[in-house]
Image (cartoon, rainbow, N blue to C red; front, side):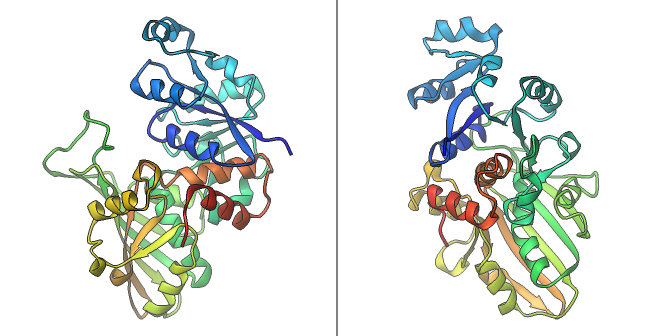
Length: 338
């Protein structure tokens, strides 16, 4: 079987990670990546053997910087089966029109609205909805985190309602332009967009969310309260989480007290860029009282959506019909294990 040819539009925080993840799969290959400026990321992409494509207006800048260019972005469209769009949010409408004109498939990220594609993707919750689709959207890092834990719980013990507070990192580690630098900033428009985003995949779920932006760059932290339809136990919920794909249980007593230690764990595991693809749940922070479930989870915003993009390619390009088989294949290639 020939490999699916993949292009990455936007070789930034997510795009470079998706490119590396795709390059490790045996059923797909990277044809090229796009950059608008000859930054250090473009130089590294070229050194890694990725073909660089740029807007016509940027070609001279790349030439002056000594970074080889294979062609324009629109020329890349002619060589791929599917584009993974990792461009900044709110420009998806423009690129969607270009992908349609080129007759290729495309995956968008959570910075775009669900309405852009009409399909939002999560590997374990709705893999089959993107089967053969021309366009799909992988939900945001926070939404992916909520779906990874809430969906398996809902399958095993129906959820009456869920409430989550997201303590969000201010910016990514490589971004010096944002804030707050020394403070906490609540999202006063309530409920936040995260609940409706979860509902784009689980429309039946009654969920409400709040968010606080904190002066950290490492990870997001969620506090989650769930009302179940029937009484359960802490042991039952832990059993569900232990068998859920891409959910990793840790214990604070082992030294993993916070997000800093979790990122250090990523380094010790030898992960590329010390990425933590799994949603991290503190086992000793899970508690069930009657029908009420309480837990904490951490989300590495730079990487948790990366395996979802790989699985979405498989669903859209009809490479693997079974969700669990695709998840296992992706996990093995990325070194994700239970």
